[in-house]
Amino acid sequence: MDYRISLYLTAPEIFLAVSGLALTLLAAWGGRKVARLTTILAVAAIFGAMAITGEYFTNPAFELGGDAFSGLYRMDAFGNFAKLLIYLAAIGSLIVAPRFFDSGREYRPEYPLLVVFSAVGMGMMVSAVDFITLYIGVELTGLSSYVLASFMRSDGRSAEAGLKYFVLGALASGILLYGISLLYGFTGSTSYLAIRPVLDGTIGTGTLFGLIFVLAGLAFKIAAVPFHMWTPDVYEGAPTPVTAFFATAPKVAAIALTARVALDAFGAQVDAWRQIVIFAALASIVVGALGAIGQSNLKRLLAYSSINNVGFILIGLAAATVGGTSAMLIYLAIYVTMSLGSFVGLLMLRDEDGKQLETFADISGLSAARPALAWCLLALMFSLAGIPPLLGFWGKFVVFQAAVQADMVLLAAIGIAASVIGAFYYIKFIKVMFFDQPGDVVVAKGDRAHWVLLAITTLIVSPLGYLLTPWLGEWAGKAASALFFAV
Image (cartoon, rainbow, N blue to C red; front, side, top):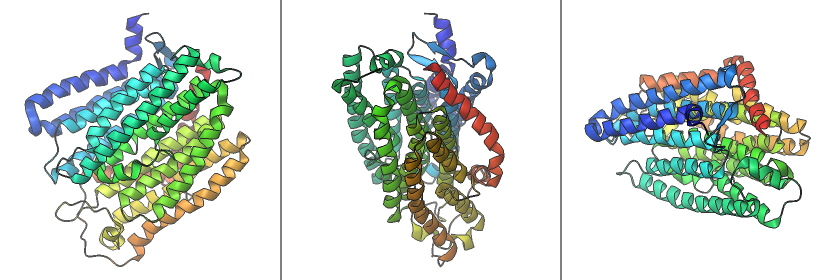
């Protein structure tokens, strides 16, 4: 094994890890007063990792990718595409955080450090081609996330969210480890490439149980039904910038990881796991839509929205084709944009004392007091609902198209019918902002960073976003092809 090549292929993670260690020393010496400086340097570090990843993704010399550390890690276009989305989401979450925490004087340099180390774990997750690497990446991301969820020590809801996330996350990790141990016992390896040929043909009962347990553990990470129970409580209780982070970057990593495991390690038994994915997809769409209808808290509503959107993404995975995987990645990129913009809009809902506003009553008649903010939220909500001509419609269209091309017409038809249910609570959002009488709450003005991010995400989901679809389709197709080429 040539360690120089391995270190070169894992450069984004190494760069972030070294940067995180250096920032840890800065935070230890400087304390709370260097929190903003640490945030700026963390953003710069993630930009650096993003530049390295972008070079790997666009340079033809790296088109075939390569394995590092004797097949524990793979650098390819699929992982690089996912990392670019992860890094963009992490940067957005860092940019909007200081203003939120300043109101309670609880912003500390540990926050950007946790995001950086979480990004290291997520990079390992999407590039893992061995269950040992997978588990290390999952746990590094998870341990950072548990602390982030409970970051506001003075808020009981934040502490509760962190505790619930930790307990249920530990349960999911146990399920995942048990599945990995079963697969190792019945196949003799933890490597995806070694497991795949063993699964070719008739699958044994023990191996099937291992496959099911692994998928169940991963379903928790992507918040798919029936392992979604933690999502509304954690999203509501965690600080809003942390919720924005959870809804985007870790979601990308978990979905990309699930796709690589299903199509790479379990690719010889598509029929065995496809029915599980189809159930999770349809159940997530329906439960996410119905669960959101009765919500009054906006963060809980967006939590159910994320569950709903995971269902649509899983339809692309269920197709188990290059087209389906490409559609899944396209939808994922659009979802990250819509979700990040929606949470930035929520972060801008503050009263004159800086207190965060989180309920429908708080945004009643918002269009009269803050018309620009209301119209941006309207575009984002309609895009999440998949209403044309906004870009969210194209995301749903390519996923359903991939399902039809894979001869899964019934799945596509049920998905389209179920998506109509979800439109109700998005329209309710609009109705409260534009048609209800203004409340007594005065929404304070947002700062420049929030407005810039909100404007960018709104423009992307607007009809102007269709100008990006040729490039996005090409990049997603390249990433999906790399995953199937490796097989």
